[in-house]
Image (cartoon, rainbow, N blue to C red; front, side, top):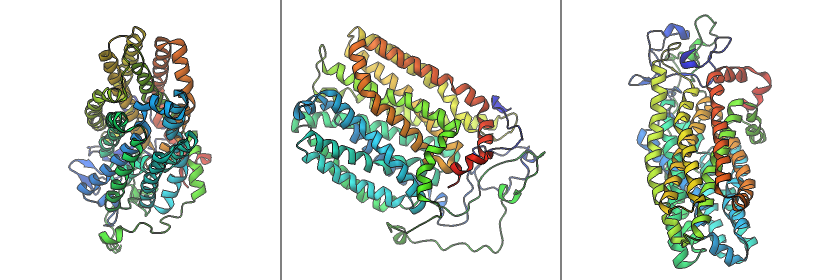
Length: 534
């Protein structure tokens, strides 16, 4: 029982358990590890094939360029949601509606529609690859924002925003799959943190820019500006976002104890195979093809349903619960702050409301890389000093970061409640908003990386499920949250949210202790196979 993680009853290591470093106890895993490919002392997981077209064999520079384009696209995707937030009041006045419908249908509904479309996008990407969906999504987003710019009635605007949410699904929901496609386990934490940083920064930076645009050119100008950015992004994505999905057999990592039979030792500890023909490397021009037909034998409709089935995994279900609470913080609290500082005694203009996001940018710039580094460093450290299985890392090690996220988030919520209740200075509201953001980012980082490590092959489906539930609750709940906030005040509302955060975070304790046993049970359950293999 290394670091308090309870072993499987049968002594087998389930999917997600990987060996990250050498040790003197290789015999405990049923075979030698000297033939495994490494980077320094770190064993590469998953093991890259000898195929030069395997995305795991891409140069590190091209991998980084790939994830940076995806991260920027995700940042723009999130910006499309939040960019009109400084202009809630002007938009409500322009279309003759109240702030509630603007918040629900123009801002928060996008996450729901993105999550809904993601079920089909992820399934399609497992059949036809990631590239066509990335490019089609960005192109459609460009047109949707032109439509929103030209909207003259609220129903037309809602239709444009609905289509925007649907079209944003590829660039947002396939990011975790792309990270799993091209990066090794020991690298995923930092690059998922970069992606998370981009999403957070996109939401905050966009509000600063659009605040001035709204003051100078009207709220509709935000959509025109977004369409220009998306047009440029499409050109860059065409040349950088090559196909990363790889469906050929590849060595994966699963280690068995020596007191149990190992049926496929050659797969666990691969050696060089003589006579195996290495495929010819595709040219860059060939890789620019947008459509390559069917790339796998996976079923589309089965893949579309698979994310819902993954809720039967306690790990996915818990991560969905954690992400739901965190999304309420990331989406609900900024909306409440915007409403509060737009009214007396603050009465800020849209441009000034946008400027209040400047501290959040710095928080994101600091938190993203720091949390990613901590997540990977803690996992490597715990793997090296794993008393039961030296060198072996468990996905449950990622949950340790909640020890940082929980107290910071609760502290920020309590401080925000007191400042709003007493109509304290604007500076303190900005401070507490920054504290809440840092804690929320730490929690989100933990939730995402935990699931990616536990279900690397199904990370996109798991992410769709988690984000879908969180977005649905946010979409349905934000308007009632605003009404509750107006009726009961900040102290009651934010205290309840803080309490919910504590309850959900404490649930990580049993997940940490028995998570490995749960993964093993789920991987063996015959009824669960249909959700793990499509």
